[in-house]
Amino acid sequence: MKKNLNFILIFTCFILMFFSCGKNVTENSVATSGQRLMMKSAPKMAVTNSSAVFSDAVVEESAMDTSYGYAPEGPGNQSGISNGENGTSVERKLIKRGNVNIEVQNLKKAQESVEKWCQDFGGYVESFSDSPTFSHYSLRIPVIKFDEALNSVGDLGVIKSKNISTQDVSEQFYDLQTRLSTKKIMKERLQKYLTQAKDVKDMLQIEKELNNTISEIESMEGRMKRLSGQIEFSSVNISLELPHRTTDEGFVWPDFLQGFREFLSNCVDFFVGLFGIMIYAIVFGVPIIAILAFLYWLLIGKKGLLIKLFKKLSK
Image 1 (cartoon, rainbow, N blue to C red):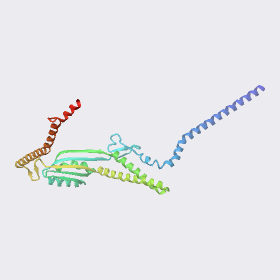
Image 2: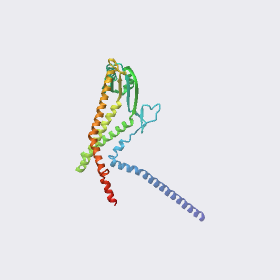
Image 3: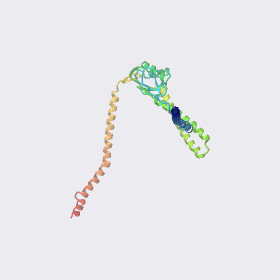
Image 4: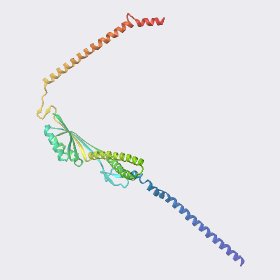
Protein backbone atom coordinates (compact mmCIF):
# COMPACT_ATOMS: atom_id res chain seq x y z
CA MET A 1 0.00 0.00 0.00
CA LYS A 2 2.83 2.31 0.88
CA LYS A 3 4.55 1.48 -2.42
CA ASN A 4 1.38 2.32 -4.36
CA LEU A 5 1.11 5.64 -2.59
CA ASN A 6 4.73 6.51 -3.44
CA PHE A 7 4.12 5.58 -7.07
CA ILE A 8 1.05 7.84 -7.25
CA LEU A 9 3.00 10.77 -5.78
CA ILE A 10 5.86 10.30 -8.22
CA PHE A 11 3.46 10.06 -11.18
CA THR A 12 1.61 13.20 -10.06
CA CYS A 13 4.88 15.15 -9.81
CA PHE A 14 5.86 13.99 -13.27
CA ILE A 15 2.53 15.15 -14.72
CA LEU A 16 2.86 18.56 -13.05
CA MET A 17 6.41 19.00 -14.37
CA PHE A 18 5.28 18.04 -17.87
CA PHE A 19 2.48 20.62 -17.94
CA SER A 20 4.79 23.27 -16.49
CA CYS A 21 7.32 22.73 -19.28
CA GLY A 22 4.58 22.82 -21.92
CA LYS A 23 3.28 26.10 -20.55
CA ASN A 24 6.77 27.64 -20.64
CA VAL A 25 7.27 26.49 -24.21
CA THR A 26 3.93 27.97 -25.20
CA GLU A 27 4.72 31.27 -23.52
CA ASN A 28 8.15 31.38 -25.15
CA SER A 29 6.57 30.65 -28.54
CA VAL A 30 4.01 33.38 -28.06
CA ALA A 31 6.72 35.80 -26.96
CA THR A 32 8.88 34.94 -29.95
CA SER A 33 5.96 35.38 -32.31
CA GLY A 34 5.20 38.73 -30.75
CA GLN A 35 8.77 39.84 -31.15
CA ARG A 36 8.79 38.83 -34.80
CA LEU A 37 5.54 40.65 -35.39
CA MET A 38 6.94 43.79 -33.81
CA MET A 39 10.11 43.51 -35.89
CA LYS A 40 8.06 43.19 -39.07
CA SER A 41 5.83 46.11 -38.19
CA ALA A 42 8.69 48.33 -37.02
CA PRO A 43 9.79 49.42 -40.54
CA LYS A 44 6.19 50.20 -41.46
CA MET A 45 5.81 52.27 -38.33
CA ALA A 46 9.08 54.06 -39.09
CA VAL A 47 7.94 54.80 -42.62
CA THR A 48 4.58 56.00 -41.36
CA ASN A 49 6.18 58.30 -38.83
CA SER A 50 8.73 59.66 -41.27
CA SER A 51 6.32 60.08 -44.16
CA ALA A 52 4.78 63.11 -42.54
CA VAL A 53 8.19 64.66 -42.15
CA PHE A 54 9.47 63.94 -45.65
CA SER A 55 6.20 64.24 -47.58
CA ASP A 56 7.23 67.59 -48.97
CA ALA A 57 10.63 66.33 -50.07
CA VAL A 58 9.29 63.33 -52.00
CA VAL A 59 6.63 65.18 -53.96
CA GLU A 60 8.82 65.38 -57.03
CA GLU A 61 9.75 61.70 -56.90
CA SER A 62 6.14 60.58 -56.38
CA ALA A 63 5.04 62.66 -59.34
CA MET A 64 7.74 61.08 -61.47
CA ASP A 65 6.70 57.51 -60.62
CA THR A 66 4.55 57.21 -63.72
CA SER A 67 6.84 55.97 -66.47
CA TYR A 68 6.00 55.27 -70.07
CA GLY A 69 7.74 52.55 -71.99
CA TYR A 70 7.27 51.11 -75.44
CA ALA A 71 5.29 47.92 -75.45
CA PRO A 72 6.25 45.08 -77.82
CA GLU A 73 4.62 45.36 -81.20
CA GLY A 74 1.68 43.09 -81.60
CA PRO A 75 -1.85 42.85 -82.96
CA GLY A 76 -3.31 44.72 -80.01
CA ASN A 77 -0.65 47.34 -79.52
CA GLN A 78 0.21 49.07 -82.78
CA SER A 79 -1.07 52.56 -82.10
CA GLY A 80 0.02 53.24 -78.55
CA ILE A 81 2.63 52.83 -75.86
CA SER A 82 1.99 51.07 -72.60
CA ASN A 83 2.02 52.53 -69.13
CA GLY A 84 4.71 50.77 -67.11
CA GLU A 85 2.46 50.34 -64.04
CA ASN A 86 -0.91 49.01 -65.22
CA GLY A 87 -0.24 48.13 -68.86
CA THR A 88 -2.80 50.62 -70.21
CA SER A 89 -2.14 52.07 -73.65
CA VAL A 90 -1.67 55.78 -74.31
CA GLU A 91 -1.59 57.62 -77.61
CA ARG A 92 1.65 57.71 -79.56
CA LYS A 93 2.98 61.16 -80.39
CA LEU A 94 4.34 61.28 -83.95
CA ILE A 95 5.85 64.08 -86.04
CA LYS A 96 5.20 63.50 -89.74
CA ARG A 97 7.03 65.24 -92.58
CA GLY A 98 6.62 65.08 -96.34
CA ASN A 99 8.75 66.39 -99.22
CA VAL A 100 7.46 66.48 -102.79
CA ASN A 101 9.14 67.73 -105.97
CA ILE A 102 6.65 68.43 -108.79
CA GLU A 103 7.16 69.45 -112.41
CA VAL A 104 4.47 71.79 -113.77
CA GLN A 105 3.79 73.49 -117.09
CA ASN A 106 2.62 76.82 -115.70
CA LEU A 107 4.12 78.11 -112.47
CA LYS A 108 1.47 80.71 -111.61
CA LYS A 109 -1.43 78.29 -112.04
CA ALA A 110 0.45 75.65 -110.05
CA GLN A 111 0.97 78.12 -107.19
CA GLU A 112 -2.75 78.82 -107.06
CA SER A 113 -3.47 75.08 -107.07
CA VAL A 114 -1.04 74.43 -104.20
CA GLU A 115 -2.56 77.17 -102.04
CA LYS A 116 -6.09 75.90 -102.70
CA TRP A 117 -4.96 72.31 -102.04
CA CYS A 118 -3.52 73.40 -98.70
CA GLN A 119 -6.70 75.25 -97.68
CA ASP A 120 -8.90 72.28 -98.64
CA PHE A 121 -7.10 70.13 -96.06
CA GLY A 122 -7.26 72.77 -93.33
CA GLY A 123 -3.60 73.78 -93.55
CA TYR A 124 -1.71 77.02 -93.97
CA VAL A 125 1.38 78.36 -95.74
CA GLU A 126 4.32 78.69 -93.36
CA SER A 127 6.81 80.12 -95.89
CA PHE A 128 7.09 80.69 -99.64
CA SER A 129 9.90 81.48 -102.10
CA ASP A 130 9.62 82.17 -105.82
CA SER A 131 11.75 82.59 -108.95
CA PRO A 132 10.92 82.71 -112.69
CA THR A 133 11.26 78.93 -113.03
CA PHE A 134 10.97 77.59 -109.47
CA SER A 135 8.75 77.92 -106.38
CA HIS A 136 9.00 76.39 -102.93
CA TYR A 137 6.24 76.05 -100.32
CA SER A 138 6.56 75.08 -96.65
CA LEU A 139 3.08 74.06 -95.57
CA ARG A 140 1.50 72.84 -92.33
CA ILE A 141 -1.27 70.25 -92.68
CA PRO A 142 -3.34 68.79 -89.79
CA VAL A 143 -1.94 65.37 -88.94
CA ILE A 144 -5.35 63.73 -89.34
CA LYS A 145 -5.35 64.90 -93.00
CA PHE A 146 -1.67 64.20 -93.72
CA ASP A 147 -2.01 60.81 -95.41
CA GLU A 148 -5.00 61.88 -97.49
CA ALA A 149 -3.24 65.07 -98.56
CA LEU A 150 -0.04 63.29 -99.63
CA ASN A 151 -2.06 60.75 -101.61
CA SER A 152 -3.72 63.53 -103.63
CA VAL A 153 -0.62 65.66 -104.22
CA GLY A 154 -0.21 64.10 -107.67
CA ASP A 155 -3.13 66.21 -108.89
CA LEU A 156 -0.84 69.27 -108.78
CA GLY A 157 1.51 68.04 -111.51
CA VAL A 158 4.07 65.37 -112.41
CA ILE A 159 5.73 64.05 -109.25
CA LYS A 160 9.52 63.86 -109.71
CA SER A 161 10.29 62.77 -106.14
CA LYS A 162 8.35 62.14 -102.96
CA ASN A 163 9.39 61.04 -99.49
CA ILE A 164 7.66 60.77 -96.12
CA SER A 165 9.30 60.51 -92.71
CA THR A 166 7.85 59.89 -89.24
CA GLN A 167 9.52 60.67 -85.91
CA ASP A 168 8.20 59.08 -82.71
CA VAL A 169 8.46 61.64 -79.88
CA SER A 170 6.16 59.85 -77.41
CA GLU A 171 8.85 59.37 -74.78
CA GLN A 172 10.01 62.98 -75.08
CA PHE A 173 6.44 64.32 -74.94
CA TYR A 174 5.28 62.35 -71.90
CA ASP A 175 8.55 62.92 -70.05
CA LEU A 176 8.23 66.67 -70.58
CA GLN A 177 4.58 66.55 -69.56
CA THR A 178 5.41 64.71 -66.33
CA ARG A 179 8.27 67.04 -65.42
CA LEU A 180 6.07 70.06 -66.11
CA SER A 181 3.38 68.73 -63.75
CA THR A 182 6.04 68.13 -61.10
CA LYS A 183 7.36 71.68 -61.42
CA LYS A 184 3.84 73.08 -61.03
CA ILE A 185 3.35 71.08 -57.81
CA MET A 186 6.70 72.37 -56.57
CA LYS A 187 5.65 75.93 -57.43
CA GLU A 188 2.45 75.60 -55.37
CA ARG A 189 4.35 74.23 -52.38
CA LEU A 190 6.99 76.96 -52.55
CA GLN A 191 4.26 79.60 -52.66
CA LYS A 192 2.70 78.00 -49.59
CA TYR A 193 6.05 77.92 -47.78
CA LEU A 194 6.63 81.57 -48.68
CA THR A 195 3.42 82.62 -46.92
CA GLN A 196 4.42 80.62 -43.84
CA ALA A 197 8.06 81.77 -43.67
CA LYS A 198 8.93 84.08 -40.78
CA ASP A 199 12.69 84.45 -41.20
CA VAL A 200 13.90 86.95 -43.83
CA LYS A 201 16.72 84.62 -44.85
CA ASP A 202 14.27 81.78 -45.44
CA MET A 203 11.97 84.07 -47.41
CA LEU A 204 14.79 85.15 -49.70
CA GLN A 205 15.86 81.55 -50.27
CA ILE A 206 12.30 80.45 -51.03
CA GLU A 207 11.78 83.39 -53.40
CA LYS A 208 14.97 82.45 -55.25
CA GLU A 209 13.83 78.84 -55.63
CA LEU A 210 10.34 79.99 -56.64
CA ASN A 211 11.70 82.29 -59.36
CA ASN A 212 13.89 79.49 -60.73
CA THR A 213 10.92 77.12 -60.74
CA ILE A 214 8.69 79.65 -62.54
CA SER A 215 11.41 80.20 -65.16
CA GLU A 216 11.72 76.45 -65.72
CA ILE A 217 7.94 76.11 -66.01
CA GLU A 218 7.78 78.85 -68.66
CA SER A 219 10.61 77.21 -70.61
CA MET A 220 8.94 73.79 -70.43
CA GLU A 221 5.58 75.23 -71.49
CA GLY A 222 7.23 76.82 -74.53
CA ARG A 223 8.86 73.52 -75.49
CA MET A 224 5.58 71.69 -74.94
CA LYS A 225 3.74 74.19 -77.15
CA ARG A 226 6.28 73.84 -79.97
CA LEU A 227 6.30 70.06 -79.71
CA SER A 228 2.50 69.88 -79.67
CA GLY A 229 2.38 72.14 -82.74
CA GLN A 230 4.75 69.85 -84.63
CA ILE A 231 2.65 66.84 -83.64
CA GLU A 232 -0.75 68.34 -84.49
CA PHE A 233 0.35 69.95 -87.78
CA SER A 234 2.61 67.96 -90.10
CA SER A 235 5.20 69.69 -92.30
CA VAL A 236 4.86 69.36 -96.07
CA ASN A 237 7.48 70.89 -98.39
CA ILE A 238 6.41 71.21 -102.02
CA SER A 239 8.81 72.32 -104.76
CA LEU A 240 7.38 73.40 -108.12
CA GLU A 241 9.67 73.63 -111.13
CA LEU A 242 9.21 74.20 -114.85
CA PRO A 243 10.83 71.99 -117.50
CA HIS A 244 14.37 72.90 -118.57
CA ARG A 245 14.59 76.19 -120.53
CA THR A 246 10.91 76.89 -120.00
CA THR A 247 9.02 79.80 -118.48
CA ASP A 248 5.31 80.47 -118.15
CA GLU A 249 5.44 81.96 -121.65
CA GLY A 250 6.87 78.77 -123.14
CA PHE A 251 10.22 77.37 -124.32
CA VAL A 252 13.19 79.74 -124.18
CA TRP A 253 15.73 79.46 -126.98
CA PRO A 254 19.36 79.87 -126.01
CA ASP A 255 20.74 83.39 -126.73
CA PHE A 256 24.06 82.78 -128.51
CA LEU A 257 24.82 86.52 -128.79
CA GLN A 258 24.35 86.94 -125.05
CA GLY A 259 26.61 83.96 -124.43
CA PHE A 260 29.34 85.48 -126.63
CA ARG A 261 29.02 88.77 -124.78
CA GLU A 262 29.44 87.01 -121.45
CA PHE A 263 32.54 85.22 -122.82
CA LEU A 264 34.15 88.51 -123.90
CA SER A 265 33.29 90.07 -120.57
CA ASN A 266 34.96 87.21 -118.70
CA CYS A 267 38.10 87.53 -120.88
CA VAL A 268 38.32 91.27 -120.23
CA ASP A 269 37.92 90.69 -116.49
CA PHE A 270 40.73 88.10 -116.57
CA PHE A 271 43.23 90.39 -118.32
CA VAL A 272 42.31 93.35 -116.14
CA GLY A 273 42.97 91.23 -113.07
CA LEU A 274 46.28 89.99 -114.50
CA PHE A 275 47.39 93.56 -115.26
CA GLY A 276 46.55 94.60 -111.71
CA ILE A 277 48.69 91.76 -110.32
CA MET A 278 51.62 92.83 -112.50
CA ILE A 279 51.35 96.46 -111.32
CA TYR A 280 51.22 95.26 -107.72
CA ALA A 281 54.35 93.13 -108.25
CA ILE A 282 56.26 96.02 -109.84
CA VAL A 283 55.34 98.58 -107.19
CA PHE A 284 56.16 96.38 -104.22
CA GLY A 285 58.46 93.74 -105.71
CA VAL A 286 61.19 95.90 -107.32
CA PRO A 287 62.11 97.80 -104.13
CA ILE A 288 62.26 94.57 -102.15
CA ILE A 289 64.52 92.94 -104.75
CA ALA A 290 66.78 96.03 -104.79
CA ILE A 291 67.16 95.96 -101.00
CA LEU A 292 68.00 92.25 -100.99
CA ALA A 293 70.61 92.76 -103.77
CA PHE A 294 72.26 95.61 -101.86
CA LEU A 295 72.49 93.52 -98.67
CA TYR A 296 74.05 90.66 -100.61
CA TRP A 297 76.67 92.98 -102.19
CA LEU A 298 77.44 94.61 -98.84
CA LEU A 299 77.75 91.49 -96.70
CA ILE A 300 78.77 88.67 -99.01
CA GLY A 301 79.59 90.15 -102.45
CA LYS A 302 82.52 92.35 -103.46
CA LYS A 303 82.40 94.40 -100.31
CA GLY A 304 82.16 91.28 -98.20
CA LEU A 305 81.95 92.87 -94.77
CA LEU A 306 80.52 89.74 -93.21
CA ILE A 307 83.23 87.52 -94.73
CA LYS A 308 85.98 89.84 -93.53
CA LEU A 309 84.53 89.77 -90.02
CA PHE A 310 84.59 85.96 -89.92
CA LYS A 311 88.20 85.93 -91.08
CA LYS A 312 89.28 88.29 -88.30
CA LEU A 313 87.49 86.22 -85.68
CA SER A 314 89.05 83.00 -86.95
CA LYS A 315 92.59 84.41 -86.52
